[in-house]
Image (tube, rainbow, N blue to C red; front, side, top):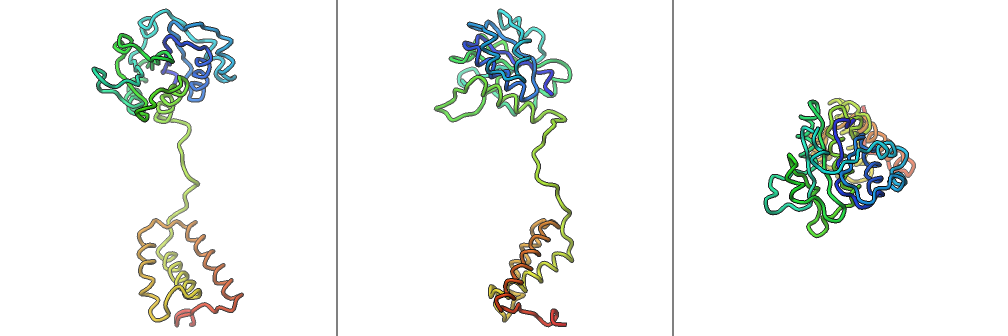
Length: 254
């Protein structure tokens, strides 16, 4: 899904965080992991948190000595930062960066760079990047776990990718209710509301005007029409069981 996107982790302190980041990559369909001068690197410790899906990413991770070497083959580089002051201008959110990056991913590989867990990327490391991105948080708690940050960024790339396999949606949509069905529902609602003494007998059509306006304003679906008609039928049945005869106008009595 994100075969042209690489995650580059710079000077990570804990192998377990690399494993968790690999798991996040697997969740979002990214598979290329580059480690720049990892501290105390231990593949077994990383694998312990990578889960079976993330394990191949850890095992095939490329380990290099410096950031310039790591980024040599990428056409666009995004560096992550929690610091947004000073010269760090034009910083994008993950969503903005993802929308822009998809224009380049068809022509080459993209890299997203994350700094060490305790301090992030240095100014010199950030300067190498094509663009900066930051994950918006509350001001007094901007620090994220490394794997959390990787997951948030990759989710935006995944969700905005052309042909993403999942698009949130509701249940299958039924057709809109016809005018005839809406009028039938309106008449049934009026009769039901009269039966429970919700409407006044003297001029029910007047008191039903707000209901009519409401029905005209919404996009009433056939499934919703069926639901409301069913509720009305049940209410009227309960009225008959309790000896409350539903009101019937002259048209109904014919």
